[in-house]
Image (cartoon, rainbow, N blue to C red; front, side):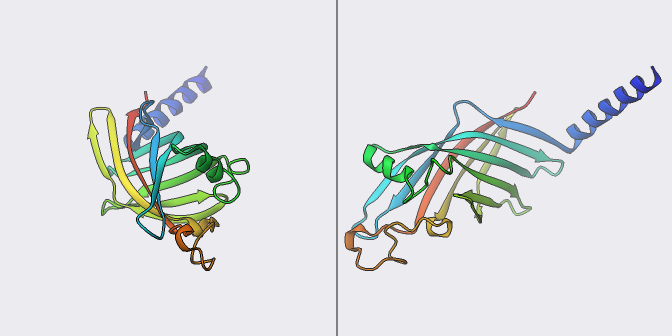
Length: 187
């Protein structure tokens, strides 16, 4: 009986302590898409589409700073051109059979910027951006943009940094992502 009381007190103390040091939020069901945009080297050509977030959590620490994780479902990459989608999913680009998800772990610094580790195709790299973060009631909205160098992650298809004489087939190394994510406080 005494050991049960002690265990209950330890459990209660752990709950109280974790709530005083941070709160955890989960991504809302209607907020699970990232917009992407890639660019041709010549003529202002662009391609854009969306990709779905499989899961994401956000934690607010006792100082009001954010950290979390985003898991992206690479099989969900979309574009109006179905041939392009098939190409983006193959080994020339994201190889979604072998790498069905991409992961980003992140944390906010005192200055408000967010930095983290992005893992694409088994390669980890740093990613930084300055998001807009608004808290309303038990929800947090995170809006932001980032630029990613695909070649760092081994995606060299039609990169003029690696191949010569591509002409209008050359694709810029950098692509952009943009997102507006709404998180809800976990019960």
